[in-house]
Image (cartoon, rainbow, N blue to C red; front, side):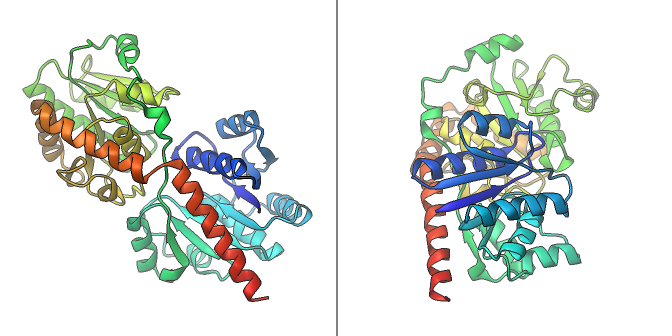
Length: 370
């Protein structure tokens, strides 16, 4: 098959990482793949380095006629079989490309927010030119079906991790040393870019204040884009947590960051589709506390592979963290079961294989219709 993937990539997020892994996996299985994305971005650089065929498109506008013409021309010229879009602007560009080229069109949906109730979103999710929507969790699918998307149009394909990246010999000691965090200090971390309040960084910090009151030598680590900016600095200072919270900013060494932690926290208020930070923390064998939103409960089975707490509840979050820090045997058991679950069910290979089957099924349906 020949597949065109479209994604806007202003920074590096889970959507970019998963698209990159999918494109590489498809190529490894002998398919021809092209990637239309933002030139000069991190994704652009990594994909180019991997030898993936690239198409530079301006994706800041959802209705960029130049981008639509450029992608459509490529699709027709190269006889692309399927167009697959991965984010909101890419969804619009891909949909209009599908209208022009009449190619099957697949959309990935990675957040569990309900689509906006406006004409644009109704067209994007209700169009007959959208062949399938890939939901990264059942939670995302449930939201789409409730919004009005036909159930048989939505297929759940879980995002995946490469287990080899998170083998037990990954050492987090260098990360602790870099920031002056004692090797023996309990370290609790949250890996998430800081763009919007819904990711729950303020909840994490409020819980941190409660934990350090009970365990004075506990330390906390924030990693992700903008976690080192002035706004985050003010949040930390407002709670008197200077010297307790490390704001690491964007990191390329996420496996090492996760390996440095004693507890990994994911505490969004809403919107989480299938958290890459949770999936990777589990793969690394780290005990996890997560809020019960979106697809989190599909990864974190409360009391089995982690602990679930209500969103926007610093007291419950702090209590769960203290439970894990105070009961190493319990924490270790959760981590072992969580790691086994991810390594058996949420791998990149499985994600790619299920996506290939989806594509093949779409093309069979298309041929059957003549």
